[in-house]
Length: 509
Image (cartoon, rainbow, N blue to C red; front, side):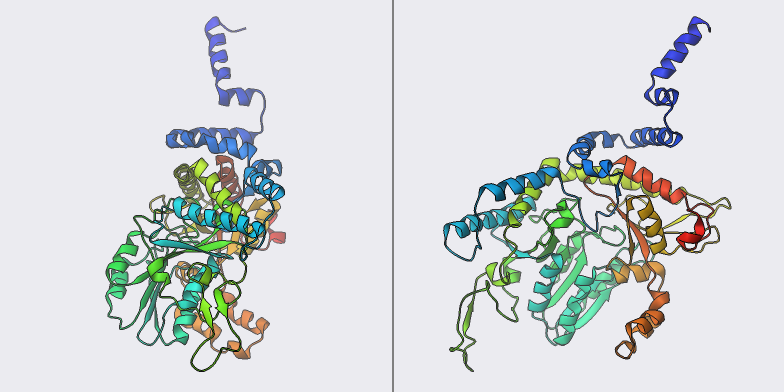
């Protein structure tokens, strides 16, 4: 038995939460996580203000922990709260709704909820209703198609877009090219994959004879880079229409369309709050939308059409005024009320709170991953894009390296993550431009892959393109992310230390 002083010392130490856990015999891993989390909270005291999200994780998102699942693919798709499902199901179970393209009671009830959803969307993004309108689409890609097919591209017009863009934004170039418009890409810096500001200004100031559209993402779906929203005003001041791809930005960041006023904003709602899928929208300035020309008409987009009236002098239809004139067929109307529910849910949590939490977790994870070393001192992880938390979101693009500097195949890394019930994503992430800059691919080697694609079988094309289809691992955080999630990601990356790159079956991981 020790002296009274020694006894008091033991009691005091044992009463400390971390030491107490060590005395009762938790796993070494759990103790290590607790120590790191305590250090994390000292470094980021603002994280304590986001504790309400930990409570929601235990209640609204409990299926993640009950299934032992670490979800790190929020840029691919958000996760829904149980309250969202319950509220939507309760609404559908107690009411009768019909196709809104009618005047019967069931249709009118649905029309009321559709218009409420439009108003909720405008309000959430602070878009002045006198300036903006909401067009429902199947997803952000559907919204982008509306812009691409309707924009007045012609000889003398120009489509300028950043190298960092989702494929659905890249695809608009095909509409531009078919109408004889000029297509140009604004380059990225190779270090942090940011827009090269000097060269962007040069492109924006080049003389253009016809209509001109500039498209860029508020946040890269590849690297998490946040490109300045100020470029919207810079481009508009020079006479450009601006398409701001906000699909990856708005799940964890506020977008105020009363101050930043792009002409077109495409969104997918499943990326914001997980449910429902199959519905997105185009938020468009009324002035800009009026300049789009629909290449066809369909059910739902017209007030009246005729078969026999069609002749050389008349097209035989009247297009409905926006937004109905852009909503092909019947919208996914039973899912529309779930959009209002989801936006109210995010508003209740607070997007600034979500942003603060995601920022602190992202910075901690970036620092820990970049500090990992093999026994010979070589890095285990290579990060593409910003290496710190400045002007970036919660999406991290990386590759795993072995001690000789050889890159692990990203799909092998994903297979190993799958074994640990850890959801991340591998590939080029529908963003070939950012991938090509990050991995250092040049025009000639890429162009050779497409030179004879029409004469090649799929197998032959893939064989030729194989060196150029390397990808990266993407980790992304969101509304329900916790310290435990990023800790598990860090522990997973540590497993690659001093392991030679190879196939899963050969590594022993």
